[in-house]
Structure formats: C-alpha cells, structure tokens
Image (cartoon, rainbow, N blue to C red; front, side):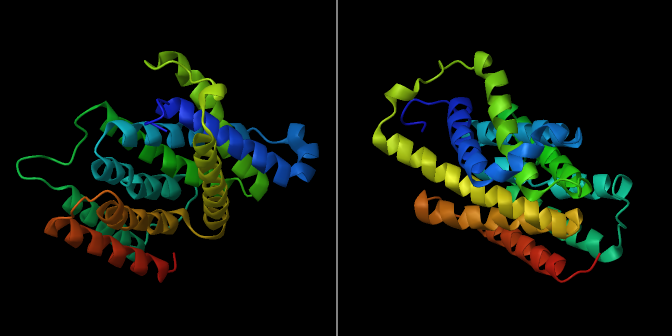
Length: 260
C-alpha cells in the first residue's frame, strides 16, 4: 500500500471499511439490536480504533521490532488494569509469566549505550497503542453482556472512525478509490479477511480466559515477526534477539499452563 502511494491512515480506512462491510454481511441478523447496545460498546470501539491505527502508523514510521516491543509492554498495563478493574488476582505465577515476557522484550530491544525507551513519535505511538491494547482487552473481558459479533464490529468501525479523524492531519492527500489497481484491491481484501479472522479470534479468546494470561500469549507475535522478517525481509536476528525471543516463548508456554 505504501508503494501505491497510500498513507497508513488511508490504507487503514479502506481495509477496515472492507472488513466492516464483510462483517456486516456475515452478522446481518444481529443488526436488529443495533440501537439497544450499551455504552460500553462505544468505549470499546474508540479505544480499539486508536489501538489499531496508532500501531499501524508506528510500524510504518518506526523500526518494526522496536515498535513491536514497546507495544508489547501491554502485559504490564494489563496486569494493573485487570487487578484494579476486573479484580483478577495478581498471583505469583502470573507475575512470573509477566516478568519473563518483559525481560525477554527488553533483551530483544537492548542496544549498547541506549535505554529501551521511546525515542521518537513512532515509538510513543507504539507505547500508547500497547496501553490501548491492554485497555481494549480489559473492556472486552468486562463486557460479557456484548456478543462476539458486536465486539468485533465495534473494533472494525472504531478504526474507520479514528482514520477519518486523523485524515486531515496527514501530509499525504486522501487516496481516491479509482486510483487503485486490481492488485491493490486484492491486497486490501486479503488484509480485510485476515483482520476479520484475527479480530474474531482475539475477541473470543479474551472472553474465555483471563486478560493477564492472554496478554502474555499475545507476545508470541514478537517471535513470529522476528522469524518472518528474517525470511521475508532479509533481516538477521542477533544473539540477544534470539535469547529475548526464547524468554518470551517460555513465558507464553508458562502462561498457557498457569491457572489464574
């Protein structure tokens, strides 16, 4: 999409609009209860919209692995929010899993003479996206009265709304649909389908398990991204990145076998 001259905000708008349309078709029978939705669906939509959009912008403008690692400090925020809002017990095993995952993230992020803190606007966006992700998970868990389709549609529409809000502040002009090639549309539709699947899986998973446990399991994405960047983008992982990734895998396995 970047090669086609489409900004991150515009590409998010189009892909999530397609996802919203597809979702509306799949969940058509649920629309009759649209106007009886509780206010929590609005908060979920706005927070999830910011989370997804800020993450996309951070990845585009920043260093991918550094952005992802700052984003995946979210287990720390999740632990705090879940303890005080959802009253989930912060037991020893859960804290150990969180600690291992964060140590792994810092090890992967470590560079000589530098602290693992945000250095530019992209990294601050990534950090804020991580906070938003934790808050999204907690709201999802708390909103047990909302159906899976309602939660998923809230996420997709939230990104569309946030994209429209951010559109006037972008340096690149809004891309008209008529400039897209068949390949561009195919890419956006593929992304939309993946977004549909990912959102449904996340919303279902968060509803079924404790958010502190889920937040650590999500960090396995770091390892997947590191391996994918090696094979797809020819980026070579250094020893400390392998060590950090290994700690994250251990934390994920530990969390998966830990009852909260």
